[in-house]
Amino acid sequence: MNGLGIVAAESSADSFKFFASRPVRIGEYVVVETPEGGALGLVERSLITSYSIATANTYIEAAEAGKASSSNPRDKGYKASARVLGLVEKLKVGVAYMPSVPPVPGTVVSEASSELLSSIYSRTERNFVPLGSLLRNQEVTVSVDINKVASRHLAILATTGSGKSNLLALIAKRVSKVRGTMVIFDYHGEYSELKIGTTSHVQPKINPRELEAEELAELLDISSSASRQRSLLASVLTNEVRRAGDFWEALNGALNGIMNDVEKSVEDVRNAQRLIEIIERARRRKGRIIDPDIGDPLDQVRPNYINIIDMAELTETQASIIISYYLSGLLEDRKQAQRQRMSGGEGRVRFSSPVIVAIEEAHAFLPADNHEKHDATSAASKVAREGRKFGLSLIIVSQRPSKVNQDILSQMGSLAVMRLTQPKDQSYILESSELMSEDLASYLPSMNVGEAMLLGQWVDLPSIVKVEKVEEKLTGADIDAVKQWSESQSRSGIAREDTSEFIKGI
Image 1 (tube, rainbow, N blue to C red):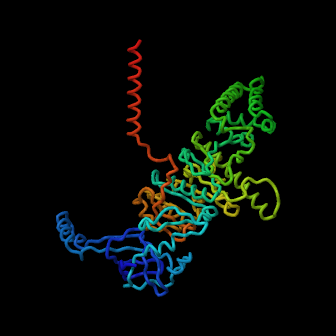
Image 2: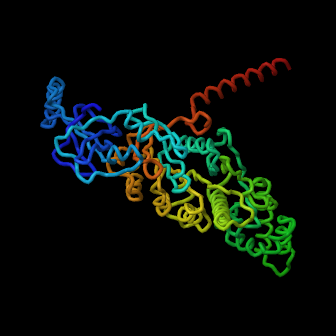
Image 3: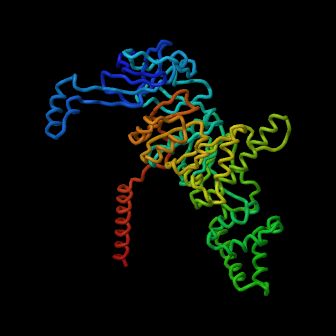
C-alpha cells in the first residue's frame, strides 16, 4: 500500500479527515491503522485549497495569486473525508466489524491495494454475481448477493439516460444464468428485444370476469368523468354475466335489455348504446389484452425464465391494474407454495421457487401522493411488507424517487443509485434510507452514465462502480435523430425519383 496522506487533527471511529499528497477522487478506498488494526475507508468528499487565492478579493489579485500558486507546490492543500467501512481483517471474511477507537491524528493513510479490494468485493460464492468494477480501480470486480435481491427488495434510482435500464437488464442476465424466475413490467418497451437465453416475452392479459366494475371501466377506456356510464356498467356486471359462457354476448345482452326497456330513461338508453360502442371498440383494439376465456393470466408467466410483460399499448391506469392483478396473484401463489413446503401438502402452484418482480417507471405506478382507488400501490405495499417471507421480491426502478411511495421505498433493503440532479430527489433518498450519507448524496449530480452507488444488503460494503454494458439489450438508448432524419430524407428522395420516372413513361 502506498502512502497517501496523514489523518487530520480530529477523527472518530466511523469517519476521519486527512491531508493528502495529491488530489483524491471520491470513491477511492484508503487504509488507516487504528489501535484495533487496519481499517478500510471510502472517500466521500474531496477538497483542494489554494492558500494564495484564498486571500484574493479581486480578479487581478486572483490572477496574480494563481500564477504564484502554480509555481509553489506548498500553496495547494488536498484534504479528503472518508467513511470507515470496517476493520480490514474482518472484511476479508465478509464481516463488517467497526473499530471502537478512532485512528490517531498524524497516522499515515494509504491507498488500498487491488489485492485487498478484490478479496473484499470480488466474491465468488454461488450466490454472488458480478455487476461491474470499482469506478476508481477497474481491476477490481464488484459482486452482489443475488439472494438478497430475491429476498430483501432493491431500488434502482437514476435520471433518464443514466443507465438504470441497462443495470436492470444486467441483473436479469445474471438471474437468467442461475435459472431464476423474474417478471419485468415493461411500460416503454425498453426490453422488447432483450435476448438473454431464458427470456419470455409476455403479452399482458387480464380476465374481465375477475375485475371490479371500475377496473373494467378503466380497461375499456370509459372516461373517469362518465359517472353514469360507469354506474350503468356496474349495474349490468352481475354474477350471471360473469359466469356466462360468452361473457361479451351476455354483457351486451344486458345492455340491449336496458335499451329495449320502455321504462328506462332516455339517458339510460343513450348510455347503454354508448357502452355497447365502447365495448366493441375496446374488443377490436385490445382483444389480445382483455380476454374472458384466458383462465388465469399468471399461467403465461414461465418459471425459471425472465418474463418481459410488454405494457407499451396500455395507459398508465390500465398498466397499473395489470401490475396490481399480477402482483396479487404472484403473492398468493408464493404463499401457497410456502405453505405446501412447510406442511408437505399437495396442490397446484405455478412457482415453487422465489420470484423477482421489477416495476419500471415506479413513480407512475407507485406514487407518493396516491389518490387513485385502482392502482398497483396497495399490491406493491403488501409485497414489500410480506414478500420476503414467501420468496417474492420487488425491484423498483424510477427516475424520480421523491415521487415514489415512501412506505414502499423505505422497505427496499438495497439501493443502486445513479446520477440524480434534483435536490428534492437527493433529499428524499437521504430521508428514506439510512444507507446514503450527505456527502455521497452531494456527489450524485456529478456521476456519469453507467456509474452507480451500490448500497445495502446486496453488497458487503458501499461501492461506486462502473456497471457492465449489456450488449443483448438492443433498445432503450437515446435516439439518433440526425441519422434517422438523414435516412428519411434519402428514402424520400428515392421515392420522388421513382415517381418522376414513372410519370415520364406515361
